[in-house]
Image (tube, rainbow, N blue to C red; front, side, top):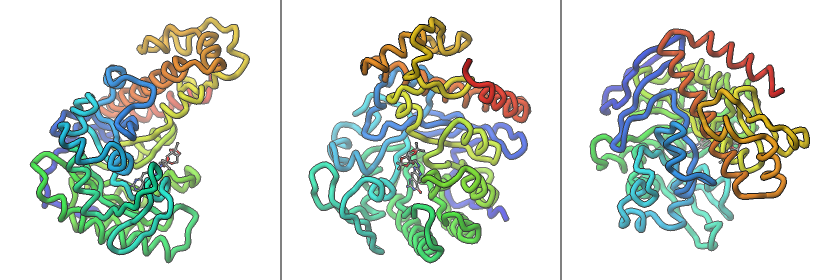
Length: 379
Ligand SMILES: CC1(C)O[C@@H]2[C@@H](CO[C@@]3(CNc4nc5cc6c(=O)[nH]c(N)nc6cc5[nH]4)OC(C)(C)O[C@@H]23)O1
């Protein structure tokens, strides 16, 4: 069932479809986002190990920031007084912010969930903090993010059905409150709902239907990429995506590996975010056309070849594996920097290949060839 929801302006334009895969453009107050899009994660107002110039040159249209981290430090009101997140950071492009509840459950101490809010102690200074749907929306408005997320409760899997059901229904009530709190936002700014329901199809359906009845600019699929097997994640996408309005953007939170992304695009997902490109880069692992390459491995010590001499990204095309291996083993900061940019550039080149393939009706061929290249591995 695909309920149309018409009560909010739609800033998403579908350009082409190929099977369930879609390519489009999402217009935000700070610029246009080409979809399917991968959002590099700049959690606390910085892309770890990269200049914003490189993030833009790598092809990213939009980056993610976190309410939880930024409200604790430097503070949402302070960022607002300094002109908002885009000016504060110098990124000056589209930004999406997560709503904070998920990060509280991942990072904070002494956290408690009630109907009203989550309360916790800051992991920075131990201060007692209350984060309600209303405060989360207020923080995201202070940050000036182009796309805000509703406040929700994500249950880690595996979990009891009763707990998944409880959290899903609480998240629906918080969705209503988030939307009411968001209504004063200027035109063009967006609020996305987040589908919960764990690994239980009926609860996923109830969550999706409830959110569409409330009505949002876009819809995220949450509660995944928290350690469940890929087949569980993909099964929940199969259950959920068809229930979301096809004319609005769909965002799969926290995902993922290049393989996860390819499978999710095939199932109709438009937006992604994941710390993997920068986090794995800092740990010496490169993402390439031929799969992942661990530069810590001694086999690279004398290898003069670059990671991919056909890459459009200069560091991927020019840096010798032997040099990258040396930097990683020596713990040189430049190693983390080069591999972070190499990985973000690879993810963006994958997204560009996906967008082009869908636009030309050749997504299936792209899907097969990309997976064959990964399977070939790095030689
Ligand atoms: C994949 C990878 C490398 O990403 C790492 C680590 C563990 O998974 C990640 C990524 N997964 C992830 N799932 C999410 C679900 C929700 C959600 O249901 N609601 C809201 N508001 N935000 C969410 C953000 C999410 N991020 O989540 C933390 C714990 C932030 O670290 C990330 O493994």
